[in-house]
Image 1 (cartoon, rainbow, N blue to C red):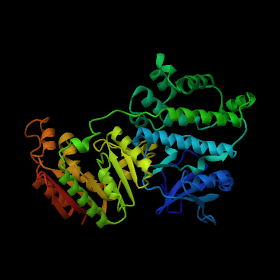
Image 2: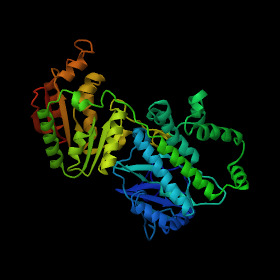
Image 3: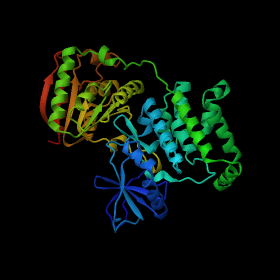
Length: 471
């Protein structure tokens, strides 16, 4: 999709607010504003609270292009700081979703104090600089009108608060709920999940049952009618502030920590010896250093050991791991360190995030977002090829598709006689994987790139390769 006569690409996920639209021009992220939104922006950009939020990194860096490009069909055009990697809330861990909710509330609270509000409360308004959340929907700010409630409350509940309640109170991973519905968890579904004595859990009476009852009561009323009723009832800015304070207190209480999982202590229980780990770290360090300060995609990152090695040289690292518990522990550690180069994400490589929302492109699929200068696939191939029955050529097709042309794929082949491979094979019928052999793997690699480095790990049952893709 393009804006006529401009040659720029419109962001497929930016269409719900007709007053502004995000689009791309080369590497620039731009936002077009209509007359009303342009007035809101100019008032916002002059406000101290907004300058403070951008200065501290809580809101994405933004500037107005002046003069407005003559070929732009907008009253004003903004240029945003580019976020290194766009992720979706169902790829976040619990602590990430909770921190995103707290940032949303902090931004809203600061806005209310200054006479502004936000039009919506979606989790998709937040992205990440490494392990630090940043609010990106600058077009959401508008002047606060007395007597009006926060328009984003329902979105906040459905995409942030309800998923947190589901995991904190029921112990269910929230990611499948958000992946299934782009608009989040509906109040009706929440009421069914929190029936009986569960209805008295923290946050549920007010934000699930009372919220649902009010919606049902006003289902036939227009938005303007509801606003008029609230104004007549004395709804004020101070009540809006109190709502934000109450939500913030609730979200802070919902600090859920999952127990151990199969992968939590993998680095200790797997077949690696200390010499194996040291050899792997050295190989990864040299490969990333040789490629330069670009982007790294670490597939099967586990506790982030090799993502941290890559971050010595890379500008940004996206560390993908399928276990939410492991990702949550990694995120908390990175957050506490103030790390802004490593972004941990929850993702199953055998079932990655598909495209979603309107026409399947409103939220881009992971495969359409993930393309890196260096791809690390360490102790991954055997899990996909044996554990998940993905044909070996297709495994390598996907790994090379993630790698930019001329970039480096650092891949580990676990030999069939390795203890971990034998463990996986023991659960499969005999002879099911006759092509899972080192010579076959190397022949497949050669068809997809040029092997520039190779090393045998001291254990003798694993080999590392550095491949220039397309080279």
